[in-house]
Length: 207
Image 1 (cartoon, rainbow, N blue to C red):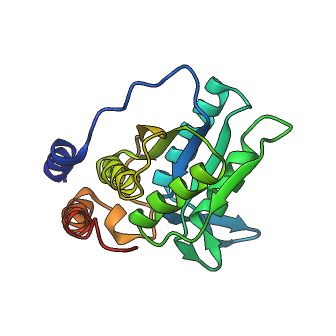
Image 2 (cartoon, one colour):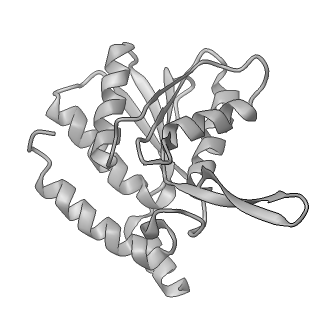
């Protein structure tokens, strides 16, 4: 498994962008959901739906940037992957609010996205709607290269030249995710290659 992790990092891991002194928004991209076992007395454990460790790493990175840039920055979560009527973005928002200072900040989100291209389009639509000109995009580090490609494609497709994006990876291990591709680096390697080729070949088709 170490070989596949090394190969994946070699092919897809990219360095974080240098950040400015201030940005308008911080965006967290959903990276799946997971289950934890919750103990119920006297001897029962049941699974409870929660964030995957990858999505949780994204939330923590967003929270760190929120503390760094101040409470005047907008927080936005993108992710429509859904189980039992709970989406990534909703669960990420709940997690962020549970672990943030009081009073909690306002959080915007979108739950329409069903793939990474949807994340890019719906996030950029949000930035335009709010007239934001800069944003940090935080994603699971293994997916950052693809999400950066899709965001830049969407800016080009809409001929948007006045929005500056900064891409930052959130470090997390594989496993503990309801999405099979995020359970180990081999699965994710295959998935990233196939979907990257697909997104590249279909970059100019209507969404």
